[in-house]
Amino acid sequence: MVESKEFLKSILDTISKHIVVIDEKGDIQFVNRSWQTFGDENNCQCNTQWEEQNYLAICQSAAQQGDEFGAQALSGISQVINQQLTEYYLEYPCHSNTDKRWFLMRAVPFEHASKRFIVISHINITERKIAEQQVQELARIDGLTLIANRRHFDDFYKQEWSRCARLKHPLSLAMIDLDNFKSLNDNFGHLVGDICLKEVAKLLPDYTRRPGDLCARYGGEEFVLVLGNTQSHQAQKLVTRFMAALNTLQLPELAGHPLTVSIGLATIYPSSIDDAMLLIEMADNALYQAKEAGRNQLVIADNIEPLNLEQCP
Image (cartoon, rainbow, N blue to C red; front, side):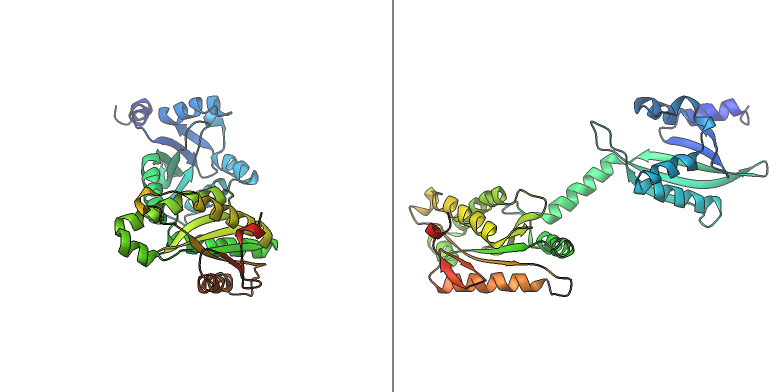
């Protein structure tokens, strides 16, 4: 009884993993109930006749339509069939219209009656992937201000520099420093200083809404704006709007004391032969000039001259 096909099928049908068995040509020999049910729920076109399908052909078709995971599955399973690998694993997304889902595929060979077969199982790992993403997201966020941290800025900035260099787009960067922050901490306490940092951080996302933009805490009382594909005059308008918004901010904890910032702004057309630190140094030098000129102002790296808010509508 244990060796009967129906008995073994009944066992496999109780398993929650989606299981398919193929031969060395890729022809499907068996699918379990979980596989069939998943196909029914996701409107798979060949779902009613799985055992007439070729699994490798399905992967190849997906790869030809630009599915990178289809291409990886085709390559990995083929290597198991050709005995180049003893087993193969692949994590891949399989999102529906309503849910984000991830699966882990495992392909392992076995022999029966002098014939070679491959068992391919798919298990839902969505909960694990979501947990991993949450951990990764937390690692990219500044704990106090809840915007991007320095680590995330470093990674994002390198990518945006490369993207703008490839597309020949301008890249603007603004270095923002809270004025007299040490005195503010000394006079009102560090808790009030933290409130000021958080309130400034709340304003910044309004000016970095595009995929090529980022606002981040650079360190201490410094923030940074990355503005991809943004000309100098466009960045100047954005930064000026931010300064105007900050000027209207009333914090009762400061008892009427103004909260102001100094900003250094720089724009460049990145090049693959240039050091990405060049733009940061330009903006940082402009910030230094803004602070030396009396604070509460914006300096553009091109001319290193303070610009009053009235000059930038």
